[in-house]
Image (cartoon, rainbow, N blue to C red; front, top):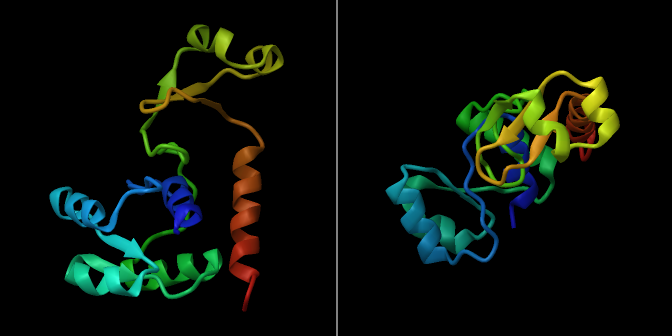
Length: 144
């Protein structure tokens, strides 16, 4: 229910657990065990989770990010320290190890590569950061 928000929080560098299909009881258990805040759009789950829970009020991603900026003081600055897909840490990867994992042109034209410690996705510096920053600005301007 908050998958897009989870991806953005990861792009901002926040350790964000999100696993579709996880039941309410397990989410509560994980939040307590790992000392996390439980963000939800489910009113009953928010009530049951007490102080560790937070009901995200808007269904619009730009408004959700603004809400978390106010409530939790998050900073919406793209960091690329966490994988947006699995939440793993993004670590430097020696160029030689990227050779068979990226397109040939990318390998020839880029010097720095990174790998996710969780899912092993390989990243490199490119236009995706500029696109993400542009998307973030657009999200903030939607639904004003």
